[in-house]
Amino acid sequence: SYELTQPPSVSVSSGQTASIICSGDKLGDRYVCWYQQRPGQSPVLVIYQDNKRPSGIPERFSGSNSGNTATLTISGTQSIDEADYYCQAWDSDTIWVFGGGTKLTV
Amino acid sequence: EVQLVESGGGLVQPGGSLRLSCAASGFTFSHSNINWVRQAPGKGLEWLSYISTTGSTIYYADSVRGRFTISRDNAKSSLYLQMNSLRAEDTAVYYCARVWDSSSYALDPWGQGTLVTVSS
Figure 1 (spheres, each protein chain N blue to C red):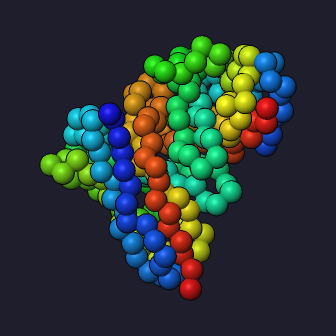
Figure 2: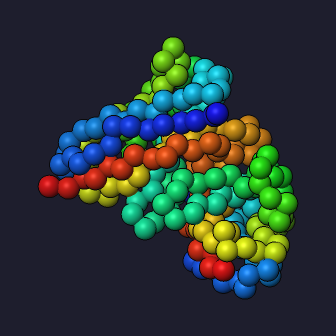
């Protein structure tokens, strides 16, 4: 089965840039999505197709995907960005695959 | 407003059954592929099941195959998850989520979730 690996936690100072990585075998050959989940809330899609932002998602959120690693980058991180972030890809056997999640502390 | 609202969660004994519902509004439900995803307390997201627009294509995660059944009623804009032979490890918040992008299989929106607790 296909697996995605994320670091359990990332810390960043307010106003700085946060990078959250997601690793998987030949991940760059697949599309990656990212979800934000604030405490007590449902997940929200923040990046799809590696680097596209849905309407309403701030420009400070960006994504990239190459080789075995996808990266979610949050520029000018704000306190409201403190949340859990999950990467997701699709596999023909495992179907929807989620990373274990990364807790971002600002 | 595009919205999904889950219901039907609660406390059930091990070995018991429960049926979850997901009511859709604000979009054409019959044109949308839908998933169930769960999140155990303090844990990450776990995909469970997928159903296509007409119900002709269905997928299950290994962890629930043979115990859970996904279905939909397009006339009622509703999705269901019949859960049988429940175990303690099925305790989680259960979300329904629409497949929003067919290229990346991105899910949006997600419902608010319904809590299922399996305990004696």
